[in-house]
Image (cartoon, rainbow, N blue to C red; front, side, top):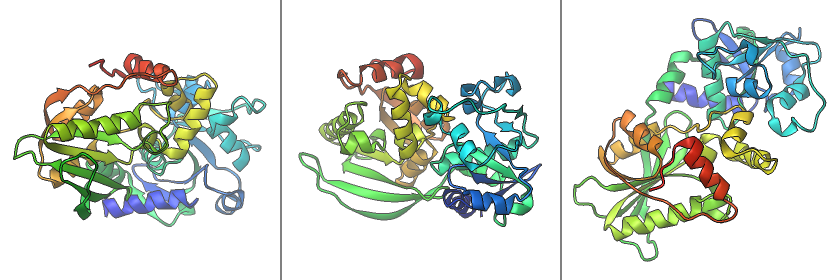
Length: 352
């Protein structure tokens, strides 16, 4: 039941409900961002719940003394304290409040005694688009259970199904078809545009991560909108290819968290440091869904339109052969020059 179980677990976390993570050590968790104080009082009447945060957020809170030097992303538990209620936990989890509140604490960081379950739980929170911060409860606090193995399998090898397809006429483009997919793990809906014809040859492919602010509203903070439009024109001029539009807003952290990151950038952080302060990795995207979509379309070899080496490596790791990388770069504007420089200097993006 791995796919449906993971999908249900994600939905329960979004809804503020507890779930059980079954592994070598089994725990129950509920999301700090969505759990109410009334629910926490009901699930934890003795008020012994501990707080689980990501290694990245622990570093931002200067709790690195309990982190594994060989694994900086290792989760960290904050031990129970009488003052640790829902409002305080949210203030610890949300960096937007870091500069607006008095110091909280003392915080007592602990190495989790349930590392596998803790990692799986944080993965589910990220997939739910929530801050990676969870209350850790007794296993009996939750009725629904998902295994550590199920979470790991879905993260490593998600599957997709084609649920609909139709013609999609686009201005100044060859005949185009849109194909809608649904993912097995989180239920997200991704789409592919099949543009023109590529005659059995490895097609020119662009992986485009959804960006509401750039693609729809024309934000100048990033280069996503121009990248999308130019990719379509390049594929059209080549006679055909595929554009995958992936639900990976904000490098995989979700729309709400991307807006939080924007707020941190307004305070002087760059894209990478904003993500880390939120408790995420520099880039939370993986390309398992993209690879599964291409396989469902009968494609296993591509020419990839990108300046991001991680996309090449991610696709190849997921079983899609990249026979050529085709450069794809947009000019800077005064609002995104620092963002583009950060992508090159800290995320390894290429100039051409």
